[in-house]
Amino acid sequence: MIQRTLSIVKPDAVAKNAIGDVLAAIEAGGLKVIATKMLHMSKKQAEGFYAVHSDRPFFNDLTDFMSEGPVVVSVLEGEDAIAKYREILGATNPDEAEEGTVRRRIGTNIERNAAHGSDAPETAAFEISYFFNALELHQR
Ligand code: CMP
Image (tube, rainbow, N blue to C red; front, top):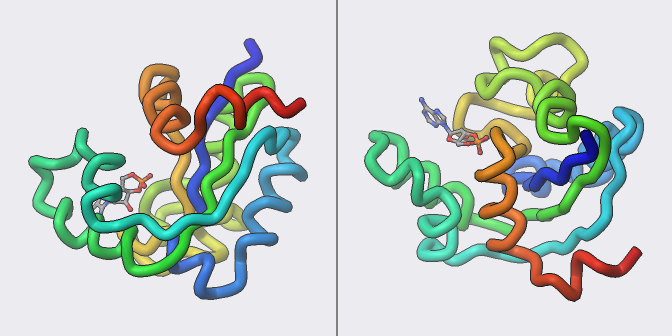
């Protein structure tokens, strides 16, 4: 099934000059980047994006981190894109991620873990619509 998913190259990976590395891993993994842009979220915007985690103990730190610098958000498309991108990223905690995955190679710890990928079709739909409007998704 052809799916879309949202990718975020997080502030830690952008600061490490690893934007191209993450996008290259996406393309090498067989997914297409159909829209992309760089932006710097405010604390409020990061809180809105991670609203599902608002009751978690790490919510404040996570939203501080996600608003500390620019990110690169992209919409990826391809066969089973949601699961495929999560494979490319590896486990949430870089220490537990498989060798060669994005988080293993670029991430630092469970919070500063280099990149985000949607975890299900419903969250992908919400996350894509959080950053991209219909016009931006119909360029190709
Ligand atoms: P992400 O894929 O962006 O989705 C939610 C994020 O919360 C996750 O990656 C991690 O960066 C962060 N996160 C998840 N669990 C923890 C944790 N136990 N401590 C700190 N941050 C976490």
